[in-house]
Amino acid sequence: MKFPNRLLTAFAGGAAALLFCTAVEADPMTTPAMSGPIAANANPFSVNAGPFGNVFVTGAVSGLGLWQDHPMPGDHDALVDLGNAQIFVQKTDGWFQFYVQAGAYSLPSLGTEYFHADRLDSDTFGYVPQAFVKITPSDSLSFEIGKLPTLIGAEYSFTFENMNIERGLLWNQEPAVSRGIQANYANGPFSLSLSWNDGYYSNRFNWVSWLASYAIDSANTIAFAGGANIGRTGYATFATPYFQNNGEIFNLLYTYNSAPWAVNPYVQYSRVPASDALSVPQSASMWGFGVLATYTVSPHFSISGRAEYEDSSGSLKSGAPSLLYGPGSSAWSLTATPTLQYGVFFARADVSYVEAGGITPGFALGPKFSGKSQTRLLFETGIVF
Picture 1: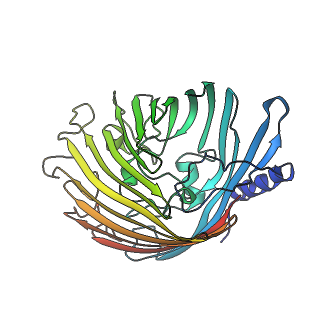
Picture 2: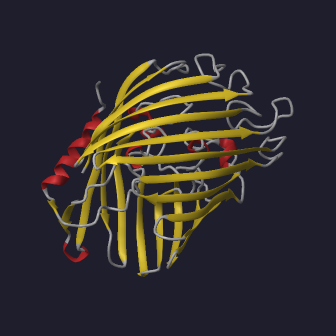
């Protein structure tokens, strides 16, 4: 596979940065967030930045191989691609902090066409997909401004952050990165984040989103997350779905984390209201649920799984928007992911299956957008340093 020069530049930049870093004893970086089973480097590299103190430099580099049946037009039965070539630079203490994530990435997700990294990055969040400044006036209060990870959903955006390589059907309905400002407050077991942002990366600041969580004890946490467009956005881009960006979405989440198990069930509901101004004659809604789980077999080997179901309302005849595989369609999925990790090196594989029901031809799976199922095998290997 031949990578574009800009991807090679990402690798070269990371290598150059490491020449000026030293490994330090520190806690693993909490940004980017990682739900496991892949674990962050316990001894991250650090740069002494003088009055700024220690600046940590970490990253992720991985490659992907994929096989699938019923590929969509422009897709392939089999392919190889860059998974990640990213560097993370951050300051994590003091009143002034920052985080910059830079490089190339792919965003594979179930039931959608696979887009190669050399096209995807420029069409979505760019080669700096997340970057923000964080002001921390006290231990319980902080403020962030920049390109922020979403507060919504149970899965993160990038492959190495999640239990499975591909993100699931419910993730496809959620925002991933938003430009905006965010306030965070924590007091004992309770935490709250509130953000004003551009939703699905629309560059129009008319979204409000939030995440409230309560830690029942060291193993059990419940959370409520959501977001809504309080105005309207009359356009779409590759990264900004027209209907979802003009709607609202809510999650109720529960997390159990006590070795050897990590389990995360959640329920999701979203709605797009009718609007003459936006040419939406009938409202449509989507509800779904998912369960993600990891069982750690040994310090180096784990098995993760995911099961999902989602269902949408409306009909094509009445003019309802399509939120899935046509108005009124539904889908379910199963995914299994064994993972090996030794130090910074990891290797894992996804086996996944998606089946759709109530489809509208032209909105569904396969080479004619009329298929009802898809099986994928996906392999990823690389390092988190």
